[in-house]
Length: 151
Image (cartoon, rainbow, N blue to C red; front, side, top):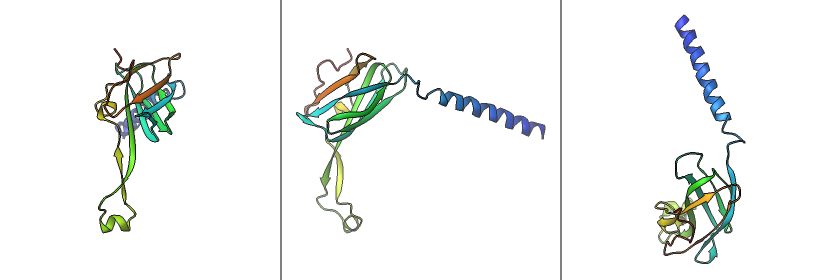
């Protein structure tokens, strides 16, 4: 019985330490609000997402949404940051099955950006308190915009 109670005490202590660590990641987490625009072939990206990951592994990963070409609710740790941008387009299915039609599934979401902007991204930016607005001018060739290589 004593071992069982001791086990509960250590479990409670571990839980308390975990909760304290998680609470420490709250409002004073060092994240910086990031704004900007995302264009593809000269047109605003209608809908998408953007992720920010510290290159050195320190700090928290962040991200935001892309709506009508603008980064909204963007947050990131400061520093040298790897960026991944995803943008989908709704495309009607050419030959939906009867079941898909009955379920109302007549379209798919298709990634419109080249992999060099997302899965194989080489986009790099430096985020700081004074540098937090970025304009991503992307194209179908997958070229990295000037100043966004992190070198």
